[in-house]
Length: 298
Image 1 (cartoon, rainbow, N blue to C red):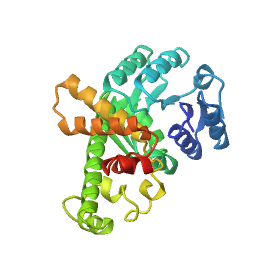
Image 2 (image 1 turned 45 degrees about the horizontal axis):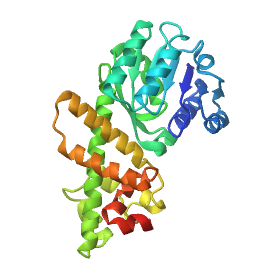
Image 3 (image 1 turned 30 degrees about the horizontal axis):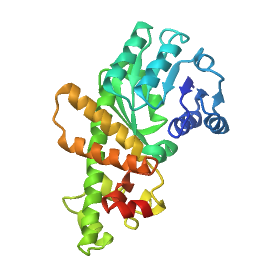
Image 4 (image 1 turned 30 degrees about the vertical axis):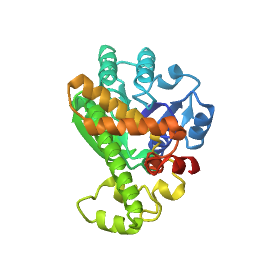
């Protein structure tokens, strides 16, 4: 059993902390949201009244927060309370620069650290089936791997500090671009009189096959578990996809990489959010691509 503090008990962090409890670990959590704290308590997490209370005398601290600025603020605070040698893991999706900055904070405090963003969404978090993309030293990875395995099904050590975030950004740029392409293909098929099922049956077994089609099909019917069958309730919110695409473009600009498809996908999701659909599943982009009236009618 490992004594763990979990900071950030929202839609992702809450189920992840619950799975650590199920695996036999002692988890103390903190979140600014009362609803999130109450939900975590029901799953067996001991809820603290402050970050300082949550992290004292723990062997590992895990954070799951909205943005890089939040991670920087929280790590700067918690590292003033933890003992040297405490493993610090961040599973937020943030920019590479911020990830490397907090690794530096941890190193100065004598704490090993990992950036370990996830893929798999809320369903994967609840099922303990996330994929973790991990950056950090070999020693830190060895210490943290068994904890990540309690929350995920695939754990990949991508390299040194920041490598996990780099992998997540690249992966989600692929996802955003591929979903936009799949949505466009279904809209074109509709205009040409081709049924959803016919296109799915062809593309899912041909060169157009991809995860956005076969696991998360953006039209109702072919993949019963996809959000398209539940009025595009997330899933993975469009606003979060936009966040990840903007991170990819920030990274591309900083590194000098050319990513025109990623840039176009970012523009599409930015427009979708501006039209008021940021809280819908990102596969709902298809409704915007059908035309303004389709978006308004939902």
